[in-house]
Length: 97
Image 1: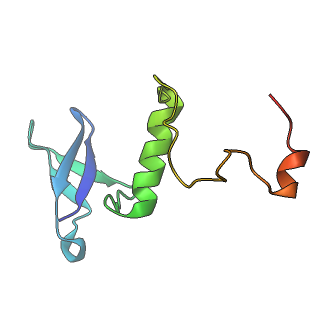
Image 2: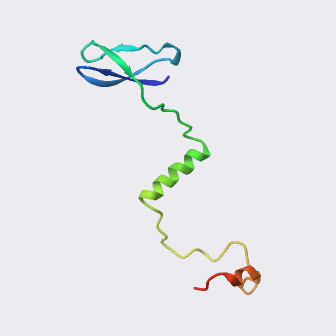
Image 3: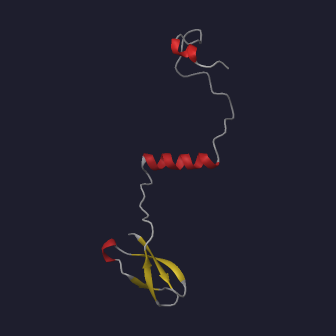
């Protein structure tokens, strides 16, 4: 059930749960009992478990605290050649360390 925000003139904002088809224009304030008008605010829709949401969350985390490399990557993965040197001519154009 969606959460809607209401604002009481005396007490300030508060939230209330209502079905989308039955949202009132005003709600009684839980603190003082006065009528409070509904505030139109941004919709809080979420797809929290979608791959896109996980990617956005991961990007936000790394913006504040990026992952730190603590060791040299292991020498595994797909073997290039038996000598460890690539024979691909495109690699000759890459900058050397």
